[in-house]
Image 1 (tube, helix red, strand yellow):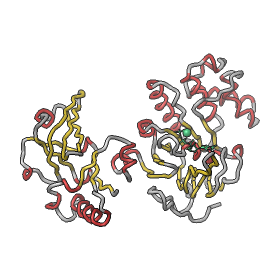
Image 2 (spheres, rainbow, N blue to C red; image 1 turned 90 degrees about the vertical axis):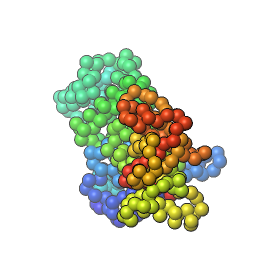
Image 3 (tube, rainbow, N blue to C red; image 1 turned 180 degrees about the horizontal axis):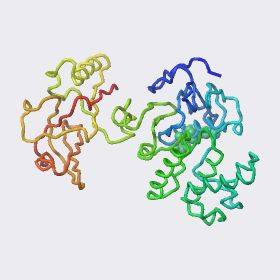
Image 4 (cartoon, helix red, strand yellow; image 1 turned 90 degrees about the horizontal axis):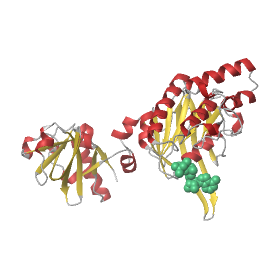
Length: 387
Ligand SMILES: Nc1ncnc2c1ncn2[C@@H]1O[C@H](COP(=O)(O)OP(=O)(O)OP(=O)(O)O)[C@@H](O)[C@H]1O
Ligand SMILES: [Mg+2]
């Protein structure tokens, strides 16, 4: 069944979902909302959230603690009822299906293995419930244990395993029944950094090899970026932006996304020299004239956003010799960290910009604390942020 037309969520800045649930969509949320009754009254924790997740996609829900990630995941799994909106799984309306009738498995942070069962029996559990024949069951358990490099531990009990090993068994148990969608709620949070990084690679490989759809919840931007095809950023129960890690990093839609996914520079538009002389179709000119218009109507000072590695430093030159947009300032700090040097330039009493330079470059060598420097950028690397 193909559902009706969907409407975009007017409250979020997320890209509007496709007009209908397409064949390529594994999971579609259509204006899903959820409130909880607490001691201080009813609180809406997920606001009209619309989202399409494609088949075979590694999709992450990213946001700070309490923004509604787990609640969203639990609604997809059927562990929490939606107050309003619809959920489609594989094109079918699954809103009213109980959890066990959805072809969805969940991996939680705390593994939740059965302590009294061996690794083999933990993994076989779901297959036994599906009444899979003995020979096939054995073959599939052995196969999936090999996939997570745990075939030598089939007869161990969970308490004889390390945290990382237990998490691999939890993953094996979740994928062995071949769910269409695997939901992962901060599954690596309890692991130390090194183990976490190797598990990130393993998860990604597992997802690719099994061609499953993964929905991965995390509040760690680096983790989401390392693994995901696309990431949805949530803030206060709202979807703020959906995009590839590159899009979110280089083209963040709001100030929140900008600072949540990396280091950011905000350059007040009024300080920028030079852009007005650019060609009329120049992005910087357009941005600046838009910015000027916006500041007139809103009264707020607009700013231009550029990542530190997209800024360039020019030292010992005049303003006129630099083409394109630029800001004049004073070098206030220079930090060497191996191949890269971070230079901080104060362009106004209350504004400092961070510029990442190649340590071997002349700009890094010539920049001296207290000296004058210009900061410049490619117009195409800049984004105007409305307030
Ligand atoms: N069963 C419940 N009853 C009442 N309030 C709840 C319930 N479950 C979640 N909440 C509230 O809903 C909000 C969102 O919670 P949720 O667990 O979805 O956040 P999260 O993004 O997963 O956060 P974290 O990163 O800390 O896990 C929180 O304010 C939380 O207190
Ligand atoms: Mg959570």
